[in-house]
Each structure stands twice: as C-alpha cells, then as structure tokens.
Length: 320
Image (tube, rainbow, N blue to C red):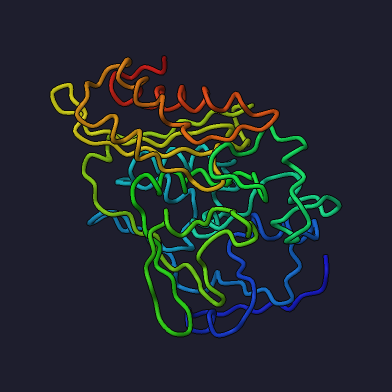
C-alpha cells in the first residue's frame, strides 16, 4: 500500500472541513487500496462521528454509519430492505460494513480492479475492456460505449424501489437527494458514478412511510448461494386488494449500471389481477432497451423470470 495520512474526526463539521477519502467499515476502501486501484493521500476515519441510529417511528431513517447487520435485524425494517441486506455478504462483513459505505461501494467489475487492464472508471479515456472481453456478469441496461459495469449494491436496489432519499452534508450545509437520482449513468463519464460533491458526506438514509411495503421482498439470483454478487435481482413491494394490484414498486439489480427502477413494469401491474399470467405480461417489458453483450444475453429472460418469482412470493408464497 502507498503511504497515506490518517485522521479521525469526531464531528460532521470536522469531517467535511478537511479534503480526503472517508473510511467507515473499510470493507471496500481497504481492498481497493491494497490493489492500488485507489491511492488516497488522506484518509478520514469517520467511525467516531455520531452518525448511527435506526428510527422506524414514521417511515425509516438510518444513520449512515449504522451497520448493515443491525439494520437487517431491526424490527420494523421493510422486508425488501432486510432481505437485500441479509443476501448481500457474509455475516462478518454485514457486521462491519456501514449502510452509507454500501451505497457508495465501487463496481466489482474485474477489469476495474485489475490495474493492468484499461478501464474508463479507473483511468478515464483508457477504454472499457469488458465490452469485448469477459462480460457475463456485466450490465444490459443503462450501458454506454464507455462502460458496461454493473452496480454492486443489493440494498440500493430495494431502497430505490421504495423511493429512499439521502441526506448529505458539507461545509456549507445539508441537502437531500432521491437515491434514484443520486446514481449517474456512465455515458461518456463513467468515472462519475454519483452526485456526491467534493467534501460531501452521507449522513442519513431516509425511506418514506409506505404501509404496504410490509408486503415486499428481494429475490437474488447468483452463481452460488452465499458470498456472491447478483446475476440478477428484483426488489418488489405489492399492494393487492381483492385480488387486484392497487400499486407496486419494482427495481432490479445485477443487470443495470445503476440500481434499475422499472416504472413500466409497475404501470403494467397496476389495476391488473394478481395472477402469474398478469405478472409475466408485466415483466415482459422489464428489459426494454437492453443492450446485451456477447456473454450476457441470458440476463434478458432471467430478469423477467426473477421479477415474476418475486411477485409470486408476495401473492401465494410460491417461487415458481
């Protein structure tokens, strides 16, 4: 590892006053520093900053330093969020990783993590090795000619589906931004992954109250049962009344360059019967606009089937 300066601020004001790279659980940053992918000169250990706590009195609020494991186990957390966290990583990692850090984690694209290979996220203008390379794990939605890397976070998919917002702080004050707007499509600037401004810090994750989000789930399809990133995932919340879908929230992971909200699927579900045939018809539009690569075309039907599976789990307990 390269030499760096380490400081440990104990207030938000002190943390945002000094330029540097924030360290929370360290489950992403430390790995990337060891690989020479990230080489910060100044690291700020923010674990002493009072940014913890879970509030479920009106919607959900999580301090940005609250650990993933604690949120997953907390009563009152919507099932889609809890399941996404439990399926994210090993128990040891969940007990270390912060919710804010999870939302900011970098892609697991192998080319991004290999400094010997061109990668526009790591070195802008160097090229994207995945487009003509090993791309089975890569995105089919939201891609560009500069980047096809998927977003790594599971819980971000559930939070985007449930209209979560972030509270951000810097030396000038605070602001809120919708998580779905926070993430940036790669376009011609894949190194710009989100709307976090220089010197800003995530202080809180806010999920608005949605009573029927108690009927929600997160389905993750992956190559092995544990400690693996999603080939495809679906976060779904469903409001069914007298056999009819009154409202729905649907987002997908493992297929997009950002957590991928699916308003077209939501609209197709609303007002229709809560049946497998109706779910299949709605999911058929999920991959509209997809740009499959040489090795990941299977993600188009997989995305549709994953959404249907999640919807069935919420209506009859089946995973057919």
